Image (cartoon, rainbow, N blue to C red; front, side):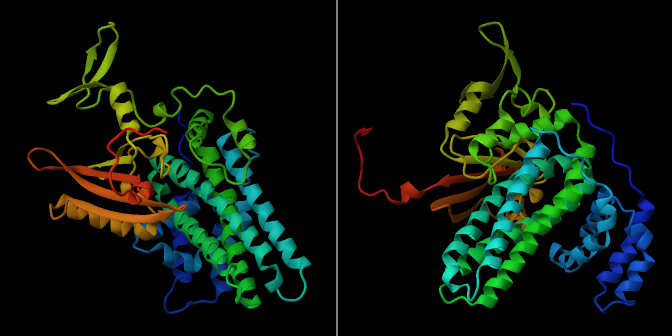
Amino acid sequence: MSARSAISLSPERVERLRGYLAGLSDPAGLAVSGQDLFRRHQQDLESVTPVELMELFNGQLQSGQTPEQIFQYLDKVINAVGHSLHGHPLPQPETGTFLHLLAAENEALEQRLGVIRSLLLQWTGTLATHLGELATAVADLAGVFHHYEKIQNILLPMLEKRQARFHGLALLWALQDHARQTVKDMTAQLQNPGVTDDLVRKGLGQLFFALQGLVNKEQWILFPITAELFSAEELTGMLAQAREYEPSFLAQDQYQVYFSGQDWKGLISDSHLPETDLPGFPTASSPSGKSQTFLKTPTGDLTAQQAEAIFNALPVDLSFVDADNKVAFFTRPIDRIFPRSPAVIGRDVDRCHPPSSVHVVEKIITEFREGRRDTARFWIDLKGRKVLIEYFAVRDEAGEYLGVLEVSKDITEIQQLSGQQRLLDWE
């Protein structure tokens, strides 16, 4: 695939704007007034580009600031650079493209937020008599989670592979997690008959701010960078990966339009790995005379096709992270529990998790690598199901650390087993 040239930016402008951020985040209070600080940096603020903005925040993360610390002044910065961002509008994405899909999901979200606003304006008196209707409308906003999954598992890793500066997009993931929790909290709050009007209006204000704020950041920052950096062929490859994800607010027939009439062969696998022999998978000649790849082990040999089919037949999600902390492999069972995309292959594992849980991942890997632990186990409730998530240290015969295997399994039915079933029963 042909990649577009790297986005140009002004390192000098980025460096000057670090002074602006330092003024905003001064723990002792602003050394100068907010207006004076803006005027001092106005020329740079009104000419900054989306990629320079990402470079700026990536630098803050690299300096040791946490997403939570950056959130304290993030929206002040976005407001300050609004004039410049509006001057770099995203061209209307071509119908049927990956960016068009993401934009359509955002438009559907904004329509639902508009409906909730209209309901609030129509109602008079207290909201108590309308909690049921409002709760249904807010719960429906959870559909945006599928939109966030596409960005987190497809777009962000592709951007990171293209240029290291896009590691600053970890902020976007943290914002999405915050929005996700805000939707869940507001949904639960509206199910409480004793909730007050003040709490409802305050909670809805926070909800609108979080969700609409993310739409704006995608429209003004993420989408322009993506449109400029990736070729049409690469964006088609991202769309191919989105086939395995659920739509966000779009009906199935609307969603499937994006994937009809396309020849998807090769678009997913060819988008992340070069065609090369892999260690442990030597090329050999098959009985038919065609070259095939075999997995040779002391307990038997498999073709690559057989090995892949066996992995995918297992009723578990498998993911393998190698000794360099890179995602190296995952399976595609019929009923996936957690979405995965080929874009994550080669990605640092700490960038495949929400910023709030990265420390847990790092602790597990450290314990495994240093030989103090071999397993870690978690279980969660997910969409009415009980899911078991286990991590296993993978070592060679000499005990050398090779990586981590993640195994996720739906154990809802297993928990209900009792007695014995010794005969086949398919009825």
